[in-house]
Image (cartoon, rainbow, N blue to C red):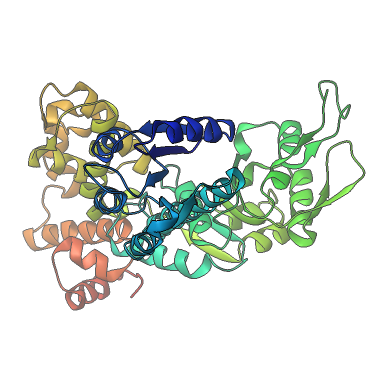
Amino acid sequence: MDTILVVDDEINYLTVMEALLGEAGYEVLTSASAPEALKIMGGADLDLLLTDMKMPKMSGIELLEKSHQLYPDLPVIIMTAFGTVEKAVLAMKKGAFDYILKPFKNEEILVTIAKALEHRHLLLQNLMLSQELEKKYGFPNIVGDSRVMQEILALVKRVAPSRATVLVTGESGTGKELIARAIHQVSTRAAKTFISVNCAALTETLLESELFGHERGAFTHAVAMRKGRFELADGGTLFLDEVAEMSPALQVKVLRVLQEMEFERVGGTRTIKVDVRMVAASNRDLKEEVEAGRFREDLFYRLNVVHLQMPPLRQRQDDIPLLAAHFMHKYVTENLRGKMRITPEALKLLVSYPWPGNVRELENVMERAVILCHNSLITPQDLPQDLVPTAAETALDIDRLVPLGIPLPEALERIEEQMIRRALEQSGHVQVRAAEMLGITKSLLQYKLKKYHLTSQT
């Protein structure tokens, strides 16, 4: 309900306007003077100011000027007698939305008010849209300055405006759904619905009904028609998580939707056409699933138009401090805690931990730390014991790495080779990243690779 403040030193006009606007469905506030109106404006959320021109103590033009200082977007309509039209024109120059002559017809002022409110709503809508676009294109929910994440986000921006189907793969907890939402938000479908379905969470029968909907009486408990996710996502984006868990029979039906953009509800005969952009995700290697006969090859190629491989957190260690700070701030806000920070010792443990559960595990650890921390400083004592290495783990197992009797030069070479192998694995076999992790130049790393007969990407 829109709220209108009416200001007039003539009480009769206030009474008439309060009744007229109240019957029209507006919430009405009234004031007999401009100074009192300013006090009301300080404590009320207004959508329109309707003020008389000629009033004691402060004129309508002065009230207009002061209201625009407080609320620049608040529309103001000036009410004036015939003899002060010139001042009304002056008010228009100073930013009034419109003016209306007394005495006026009820229909006339209602039309003018409706136009002013429509103008305000459009301004607010454009402002919200601008803020939303800025928010969307900045990927506010995705934290990461590492090279691999910036490459993924750049690819997201390129592929999002297209109609191409996207396959997102990666270990559990790496943020596959977050990337799917980012694709939707940057696309031309952003104003439409984003629908997410976890294929691993439902049985085959339930998943089919969930995707395609069902008609009344299609099965025992189908007491009413129900639209499926494909239908609900029409014009928007459908995200199929853990797509490798679908049965072969269901894979055939999903393939048909991708090819024809049409389907029938379970138990129905009417063909329903849709316009859906699909993003699929899996923590399995779908090529291996195809080779093993568990996933249809034709569906794989339909899904794999653009492939995004999400890196595990252990391959983007540079992002761990940023992610830790992000989650700390999130849960500090949610739990109404004061400002907190992480000690260097605790941060070192976070960075060195391999994170088998990836970003999701890190988020859980930070939520726990914020809740259990006794003060404003998160220390190693506030982290799970799994993250704190024991003395045996921190000590170098020299007997295992280098058996007794091996000359020192050969022993050092064995250790060096193992460190290079580990850096290659954690960097995704990208030489530049592996060299950075080892603290050496790329050319020196290439020399070592040849020396130890190791291979990697350039």
